[in-house]
Length: 230
Image 1 (cartoon, rainbow, N blue to C red):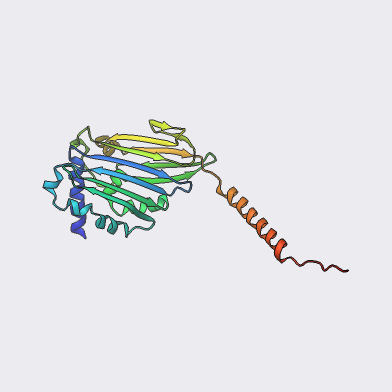
Image 2: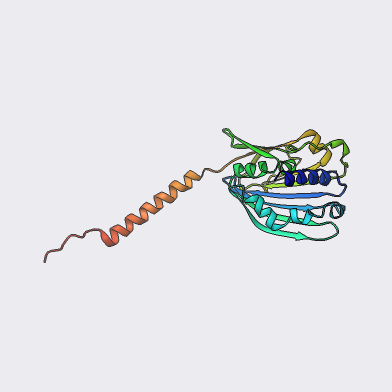
């Protein structure tokens, strides 16, 4: 196990120090802050010659093995393209922010790009913060400045405030773009406040409707009727 972790750490360092790395993430939240994420990772072409175990590390079986240790995260779709620059696509579902954080915490190298979410409530709504660049120490001075990672976050509920430089208010969508050297050196934090709906109102209305329907059924079919006299 220790040998595997050592290889992963070495692999992560080589991956981040390579000059051709693309990371794309599309994260979609539901009202209860569960959701799905689509990650596309295009690996540098030099990795194939340096690490023969790269395909095995990113195989579907290997990914499933990692996720079995985490509760509340499932692999929905997987695709690996063995090209000059190998491409890995993962579609994951997570039951909550805690499930996301727990899954990432199992693999510290993942927290560099996946980050960690924190949540706080206020009168306006729910504020989410996501800190990136945490995890294994990588010398950011050795990184190429043209390596970028891109994030897209979508919400069902309205976004009230955010520090995103690309905020699509009508689509409830946020975009962030960082260079790898600044991401690791500055450990930026995404912030957003979401106006969450009040599901208990709908639950109450649904409950009232169900009670009324049951009463109508009882009154129509089961309520004792008075006998009529001739």
